[in-house]
Image 1: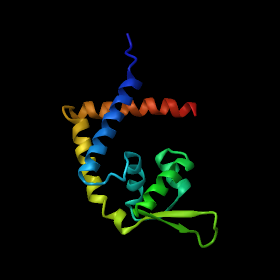
Image 2: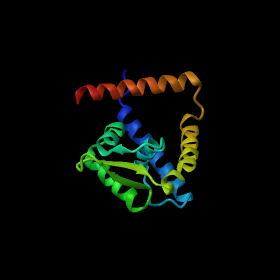
Image 3: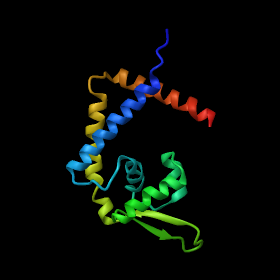
Image 4: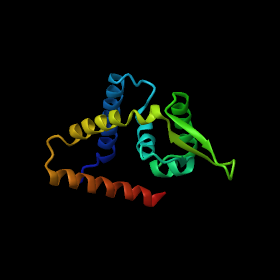
Length: 144
């Protein structure tokens, strides 16, 4: 008989991971950053500036959601908006120096998070888990 707890377990894992990230951010006195900002930072850590739509596509969020997230980061001084020279409708976003200074902290939190998530799993188990979760995600993407 098939177990039908994939969604419940995935949700619980995401919840536990978010709590862990929030706890680690608080230890670093970064209470103005939420786990949902992590994907944006990881994209911008490459040093490039991106349009809001590009960021939204890369992190699988809507443009309005990304706009709200970027506004909070901008208010805290982590990112800056750059108006396009050729088309005023387009705004690019890049990290400020303050934003770049967070990269080692994000890397450390990410390493700790992954170490905890994969603890006790053999390499084959970890690989199989990732493959199966990716298959489930693709199933939903086919419905969109």
